[in-house]
Image (cartoon, rainbow, N blue to C red; front, side, top):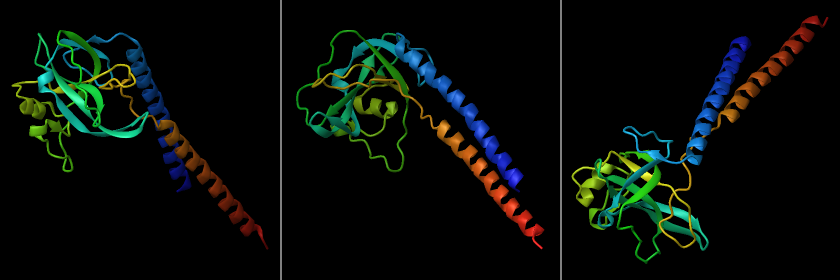
Amino acid sequence: MTAVMVAILVSLGVWQVHRLAWKERILARIAAAEAAPAIPLPPHPGPFVKVAVTGRFLADRAVHFGDVVRDTPGGPAMGTELVVPLARADGPPVLVDRGWIPLSFAAPIASPSGPVTVDGYVAAAEHPGWFTPRPEPAKRQVYALDPATIGRIVGLKSVAGFTLIALGHAQLGVYPVPAQSLPRPPNHHLVYLTIWFTLAGALVVIFGVWARDLVRGATKP
């Protein structure tokens, strides 16, 4: 039984070693994409690629997404994400999450009137769950980045099936605050492999102590 359990634990540890190498390659690709210029939006964009989209903001069709608390120089503040459709010449409008705005910010949000190129990354469509609050069309407030629902609320016949999360640099007192980096998947594989190998080692030690005591007991007169 000990040999079987040790074999299982070691195999789990080896598996996590391979997973660690795989995850590190992904993170390296994300870092390289983040440092490189944005690429034109491909037909099927992935979640860890920096892309560029050109169009015109439809500022009169903006919505607010979620309730998000962030740290500010004045302390934690409740806010929301500003999502604005970007009309394109070569496809349906793309919803752009321009960034976070505190609820206490009363000044109008500046929106370019001419063509703009937005760098960002693609977020897949979200589907509301059981506990997701219902959208409030009258307030243009939504709680899931569901392009189809947002398109209906703002009166667009069709929108792209994803949201572009705008990337940029945060500036003190300037809103909205865009995302500053590409998303990165969690990487806990080093912890996991340490746990599996440690358990295997502990099991070997326990078995050795048990076997020693068994031998000593058998040799006593």
